[in-house]
Image 1 (tube, rainbow over the protein chains, first blue to last red):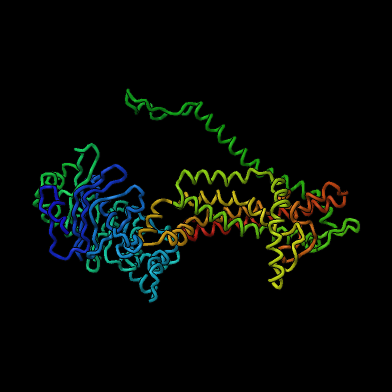
Image 2: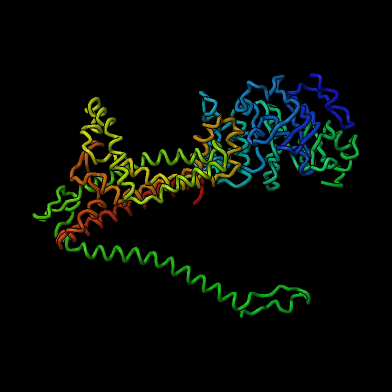
Length: 275
Length: 325
């Protein structure tokens, strides 16, 4: 790993985590076709913590997140320079099947996207996929309890997942993602389609989840990052090259990013001068 | 002209105002025309039922339900029974539905799940839909001159080696269920494929993302997520395909053998209601015409029952999987 020093071209010092980094992500250049979407973003995702990604629209925070479990592979024109290592193993290695990556690194999306099947089957989906042989009912119940949905759905587990309200659907998707207890959970603006009450529930859930999992959270909402993230990465948009290229401006303890930002751009952003 | 109670509330420079009298007139004219068209469909169906039913009444009174359970069609003795035709209609359509359904859905998956480039998929889709433009008499000729000779060696082998299975219990003498069902399957293929393609296309991208995000392989994503999500649309496709198969006339009249028998064997000749109607009408006397009208009513009833049952199943899956009421 010789990329440590030269990867960070922004003036801020590279963030070096206290705890073990579960994911070592160093994206030098990310392209969609010819379009340079993200450059120079080196982020260690720490074990057992919530890492928040903040920044204005189009700053590439979702792109970075989706690179971590190879969801970007669904986009044919996606390519990148750099590396993503998960427990020291190259996620994009030649012999690595993206399917395997996604089984260890789960994901919750911006829009609730339950499958059109029963609530129970939604949560059991990943368990069945991984040929889980144990007590399915117990696992499903546990996942629904952890996602704070159990009390609302315990009497109608055979109803369709799509019959729930938006906030319930999102918590169902979280239950679906955590039922298999993946090592890392990626959350891409999980609250953007939710009302304040549901948002609060999901945030409380995140704080509970970090006891057991590592969470990476993209959010458009600075207050949310302040409330739940241990570490915060701030992304900016560089329009100097003509396009809109996102890059990592600064990363650090959440407290430091919001109270004592080192970069001018971060200062302006957390002061609410642009969004 | 509608009254405008907000006339005085508006500021001087506003361009907001009520719709004109013409707008309201166009609105109500459109509504009336649409309503009339919709009502005409219902009237037409009722009228057809009434007319055919009326012509069939004498036969109904004479033969009663024995017509449905009878197995011989003997004009000279005025013996009329359509059980073999009902059997042939359902059997051939079911075989065609299984074949055409499997291939139609497979084609839909192939065309929509990123197996080939989108532009190529559009070309393929057009070609499949062109199958619907071929006249059924051409299908019939093709069946006689191509499909039957093609099936013969395989059918002989199956009969010789697996003849103990009722499905292969007879020899293929020429026209019969197997060639008829095969051609019928090809005829309903475009219907099933086109509607299934639409069902798969309607699945939002986020569902695909969710599936891959859970760590499914492509096959698991299609089988465990995309298919159930598209199931109500696919069921609609199958119902329409089955309906088409039930009513198909010309190709079947040429291929099925027009033989009044009930036989499980795929290679035996059989008959269908539509084929019976088409081949018997030209030379039918008054009594037989009445019997044929009765047969037409039976066919109509079968088609209606199948469609209603199909729709009911489809509605059930919509409620079950999509949570809509």
